[in-house]
Image (tube, rainbow, N blue to C red; front, side, top):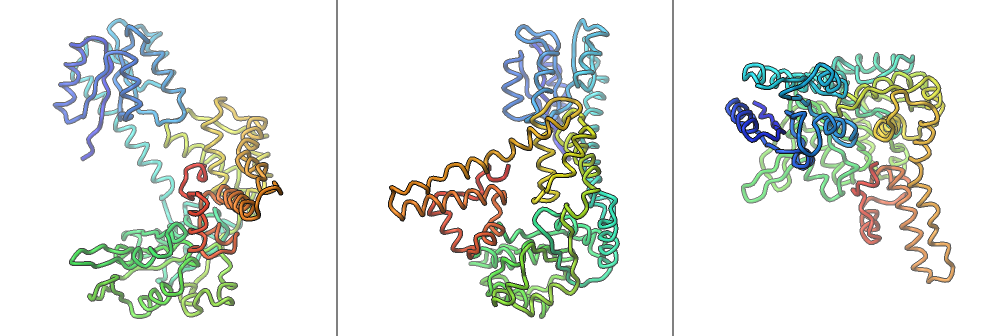
Length: 461
């Protein structure tokens, strides 16, 4: 059972104590604040699931505090129930308009207080559930749009899903390979089982085998992802990043239907469907002897090619509408919409990062603008701002100082080069290694030596 947290804000000690006792008796976690200053501290420290907020307080009135919270677009917005001993209809209407869930008058009725709190929290829970259902309603429903390319893709996924064959999903970064993998899972016979994704591109090479197969050491067992996927679907994201030794172990496990944990001697035989994804040139890896041919053909019994966003631009208006709704619902933001001119502008952008780049851009616009209708001018302005970090890297050009030693100049250039591509790939080591044509082990050492951390939040904006 979920334990909800409630913040009670009231300048009257007796009211705070009584309301706190009532809610605690019902199983809620309660914190209290005597004024707006204390309320800000409690709210910022650990955002509660619900707030009971008095209107009349000595420092800042509740209406002003509610407006302040609602205008802060960097945090989620829990439901706020306003309380007042001498409120008016106009005050109640203003509170609801700003975003209050309800308005209660003092003296508080225990029964009405509890039912209002319960309904407010139920509303939040339903919104979260609806948000989940929107993306997981039916087979292949995760793809948004009505283009012929997406219809063909949905039909292919639904045909493939009913088999138990391994599936290889290929396409550019950000085009929806993860959505396709989940759609295959949901439409197939393993839909009721676990859906386990292994992001190989984010793992150091030496950790991949332990992550996949698990480990046994001195009686302590660490289950691997193959084991955890039993009865469901295992997704190997960016399978091209597997080293040759791990490729051999994986192939052996798939052929034999069993495997051993690292350091273990007991065979494990979990049944799962395997889905592999890649945005790399695997054929070139085969030619270079960096990917096993037998593993490639086993994993690609069936191949799904995801089209880049530029190949189905007609879906961009649907994508914008869908993700505006999704983001505003999930983060309790006021509803906004992009104007027709703004949508047309976005439809004609190149989107090299595909749908993922579009979603991140929509999110940025919703957080950094305030107008109800987002016009093309605002959209162009934010689009220009989003490129600034890359421009800053390009403009540094520290390596152009010919008066410094060659080694120093090379380090400057390498740092600028790798930081530029870390920003472009949003810290994806697999994609960075592909662009730089470096083995990931060597790349990790290079980044560490240059003081660059691919997990730094600035690369994931």
